[in-house]
Length: 488
Image 1 (cartoon, one colour):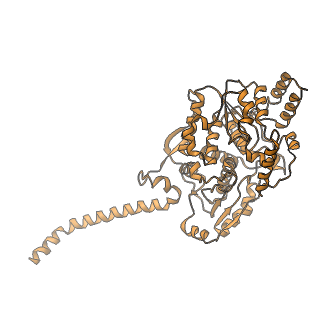
Image 2: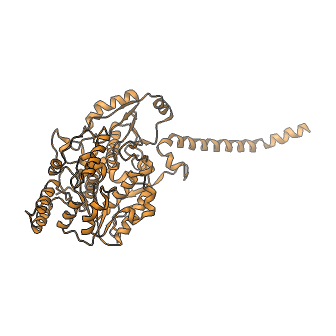
Image 3: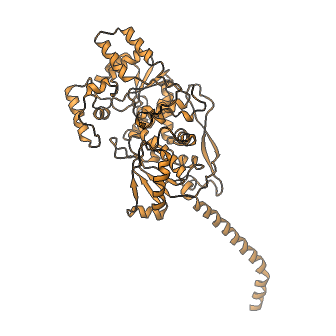
């Protein structure tokens, strides 16, 4: 009985050995596949592993430039499945963490700068942290506003971007071992090579805690400028939910004909910050002053509102804006989409504008139930306004804040779409003359038209002023290095 068993075992041993070899080979192959995934997990696992399309496939939805315009006039992006760009291979000098400050568009420009800086320092960028402590106190994270998977994947041929630090470094940061600092404003790339890169090499992780206006407007190599544009106009795509609702808002507007987006920056925070109280009651002026003193980081406290207005440093009031639109012969039947928060003074201050233009609309009135889902997230609401602003027939900002500038630059990039850049200093002078009877309506209208003939967002070179970067044309308002053809 025992001898027969041994003989049977001997007869089966070759087949058994083959099966065992196959099993081991399969195990090794699968293990190799998993190791490869783990090695790249930090870069693309969030989008790949969660959907598991296959061990060795690396495809992603990549946005390609559209060559056609829909019948409605809306510019549609073509979303096609295409291979990811190849990874850029470089020796990693360390990790860069950044905390953005300000509103959505201030942070948007900063993100573009930080990606560019990370790329040219050969460091790994951690997905930027958005400001949650500003006036708007928006709790949104990066992935709540932007398509984070697309952001990481679409830039992989330039820079490695991770959602978070590797575990060992993350533990060190959580224990307080982190060098944090604000970089010097308006610096060129040499500053980052000579001052910032040595710190990253020394500490392995560096945290930049202020990011707005930290890269110069001018004097940078063209390839750096073009990367800033690539990030801004391609990689920073809003989440599918925001994009879908933004398209629906545009469709709702298009069904009723042409529309003008009016970035009416006449909100309480802007008036309190700027000290502009023209047209406000004494009670309102007092309320705005109290608000200004309540925020210690708003450094200017004592402000002469009249002087500031005459110098062109105040946002236009709704009443002044109504006169300007009429002077520019904006058709009364056009829809006027208000891209802004709550207008200070409410219906009382909006009366002149709604009387002159009865088709004044807001996102809250176009699709109230859908927009209400974003109501307590100011940056997501601003993202919707941003999308509508890009698609409008005319874009008119009443103040040159961050949204006005960034939308202006994006509309230039899309083919110099009409953007009326108001000369506020001249306008308030003309408005006062018209109101006191020293200027007739025909003369007022002619003067407004003549003064804005060359302020429509047409091609122009960005003005450079040595040693005065704040007085230069802002890069994101006029990124002329990034246009498909040279401005004339």
